[in-house]
Image (tube, rainbow, N blue to C red; front, side, top):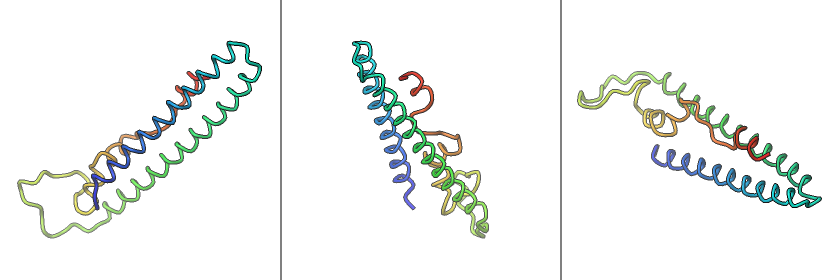
Length: 131
């Protein structure tokens, strides 16, 4: 298992979600400017954009739930693995929760983010600030 690839892909996912948030915010700002310029359609478009932003937020929350479930599955599988009779060399740092096959995954950037409850997504603050 290549934990650096998992961490890299998780970072890319976070970056993509941030790009979506920036795009939604930029479009909302343009629509707010149109509304202030008395464009009769702008208010309706803003409401449509708010609905889209809420749909994106729901999708991102579901991705977070999926990532948490995958992390929980791996963490559970790692805790149920039998202890290996051969111990790591004394110079190797000990890892809480075990090392082995899943140790790198659980202690890598992705695993630590999941344990900290890190989420990715638009978030209520962004949606409220836009609308």
